[in-house]
Amino acid sequence: MENAKKALKIIAIIAAVAGALFGAYVLVKKYVDSKRVVIGNDAENYVSCSCCDDTFVSETVA
Image (cartoon, rainbow, N blue to C red; front, side, top):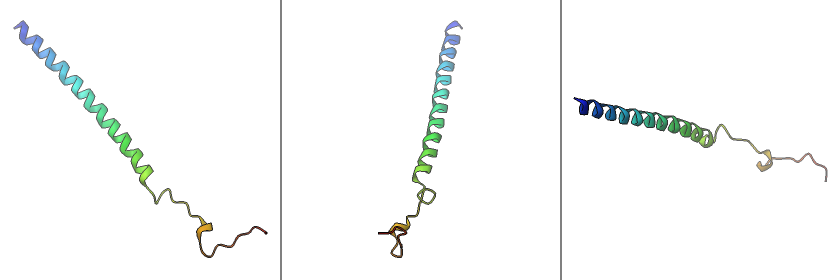
């Protein structure tokens, strides 16, 4: 009976560690994915540059 209790404790510890590692994995994956969306969102980060337009007229005096 004593060996069965030790075996169950060891299994419980292994399960707890595996659960904690899985939780950390999920949190890190969500964080990395959220950063990837911000970096990869070209429409949101677009800045127009009128100097590249064909109709651009400079306001500087030569």
